[in-house]
Image 1: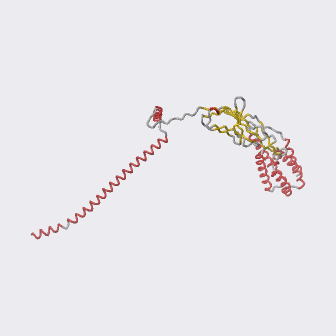
Image 2: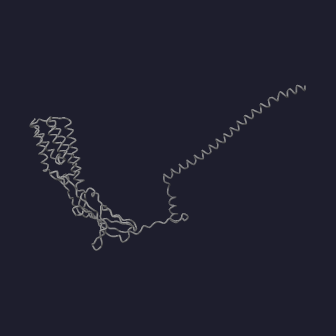
Image 3: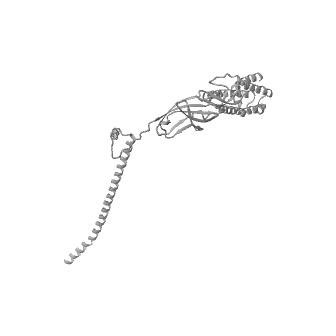
Length: 350
């Protein structure tokens, strides 16, 4: 098992160069490796091989600084969020191996394969961080907290780019509110920011402070022609140098013309034209459907009224017929007894 085990350890060290380099900065990973050495190895690996395995692990971690640095994939730093995700993934797979209770060379093979997968996952996560989260500011200076994988030091890094974040053209109608927004999408993620300062810039290269505070917007109600001109926004930092500078060119437009509502009895030419154009337009499907439903409702009501009237009429006819039938039967009964009386009278005459 000795030579075979040595080869496995060498392969394991090659994986740990990448998989452990940054995640070892997480204290929970350090504790898990110590627990692996003291609690798991004694019952699952020959005691004479413990030191060899752990030496390979420690050497692999120390040699991480020899990785080639590339601007697109890895620059030797990582942020807190990416580190926590990588550490959690490694600890989960390590616990899965220890829970399976594998021993000897099978244990080393399982550990090797797990670290191989972790290497690919971590490389993808670091590349994503490098591409999307590392110094995301397109302009200005962003203060970002990063972790240096070489020594696990956490420091604030200044992402310095051009302080000039462009110019904005703002048009505001007369007697309406003007709003200048100085916030950029990376401001909330940056550290060490102080206040937003808005200045009115004059033609003689002088400027006047208009407002200063935590609010990223400047609002001026009911602007007039005197408010037109240039404004400058500057976001400060704890380093006394600005984080961003934005220049606003404000133009005050003429007051909006409010349309007068004519008298309802007066039809203007425009209204007549619009009405005629409306009548020429084909009806919309919604209006057609509403018209049909309304027509059905009206005809249904008419049919119901006719039906009720016919029912009342028929009811009266039936009642009259029943009454006439009853009275007819009664009169016939009264006439029948008179016939014998006439006969009796005739007989007496005879």
